[in-house]
View (tube, rainbow, N blue to C red):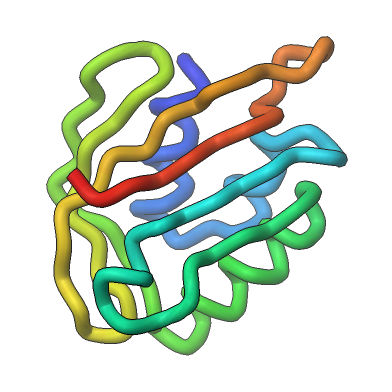
Length: 110
């Protein structure tokens, strides 16, 4: 199963641990979409930070995705809810670590 499919499955399941396991220890995750909702952009550095960030969001029901469409091995479109603000987003794996984990992922408004 591709990393992008595993990413989608972890997001749909709201499983922060499964999500963070896809990323390298020194990964970079940036999500620009919240800026359109008048919120700060999301930046998390490292798998542990990604786990902590999404665990918080999932537990307090501040983030979820729906209707994902995988368009390649590195890109998926989906609708996202950021604190009750709905928008379409595109998540792109931009770089991989030497071990094949996600090193850099960026999410932008679509």
